[in-house]
Length: 165
Image (cartoon, rainbow, N blue to C red; front, side, top):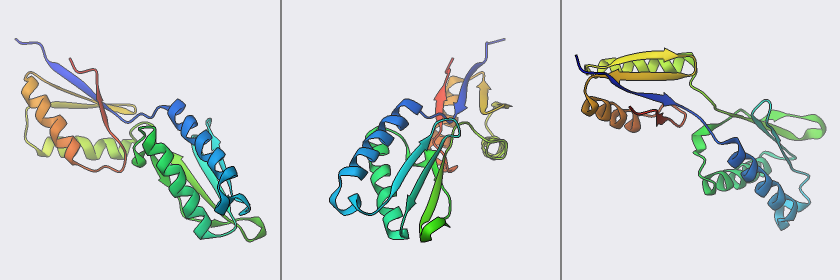
């Protein structure tokens, strides 16, 4: 019997690149003429993997978010890697928005991906392993078709394909 080939579907972000983009955005926030006196702040919590933007108005929050997004894109981070929450009222009449950095595939997204692959009626075996999926098959061509199929789908987070053997 032929040996099965496999690959892993993961969702990972490079925290060093996220930190670099945060540093650039924080520097630009303190230097930009239209945002210098706006009392806006940008914070990164590496432990909780969150961005927190606090600003006096919703318009300023959107400006800071756009500026941070441009830095992330320049650093090669997919914008789907950050899921922004709803604006919340903070003290002093300001607005706070928290962005969660998506790292790993949650169980419900993993089940959806697994179901979508099974619905393709390809001869593959999909197993969910904590925060990643392993797809295996006897045919490497079938695995390539699965990768192509997954690249065309949108699961709300970036997907990478690793350990292709």
